[in-house]
Length: 142
Picture 1 (cartoon, rainbow, N blue to C red):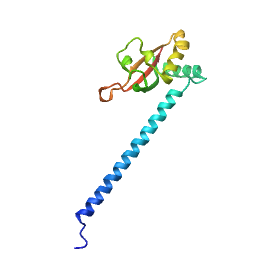
Picture 2 (spheres, one colour; picture 1 turned 45 degrees about the vertical axis):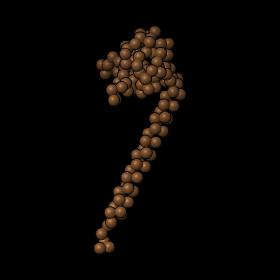
Picture 3 (tube, one colour; picture 1 turned 90 degrees about the vertical axis):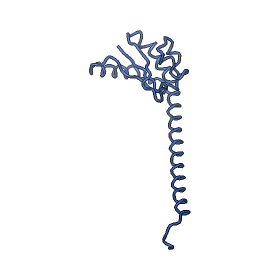
Picture 4 (cartoon, one colour; picture 1 turned 135 degrees about the vertical axis):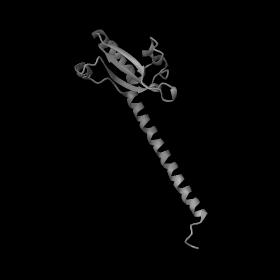
């Protein structure tokens, strides 16, 4: 009878596996949170690239040659706006005031350089996870 695994041993095995899975899930959550924080920090610290005019020109030319009339310039979580995407979601005229970080700098570049050249910009909520605004997309059109 010594070859028979005891219920206590089976419970210990199952508990060990459950604890291991919980540790792995916790570690994965921590890793994801660290990555989210790195992306957030990078977004808020990012500056407009010195060669932005050449990059914009190349991107819009490629899009136009493909028959498109607009391009997605940048996307980011709505939680990175000052109102979690509310003004953008409601198409309020003052939606640019809710931008922050790189999105705000990109919009300021648009106002200074692209609007006078005839370009237009619009913002849109791209998805609604759990029924709430998710990612924001800023589109440049011509």
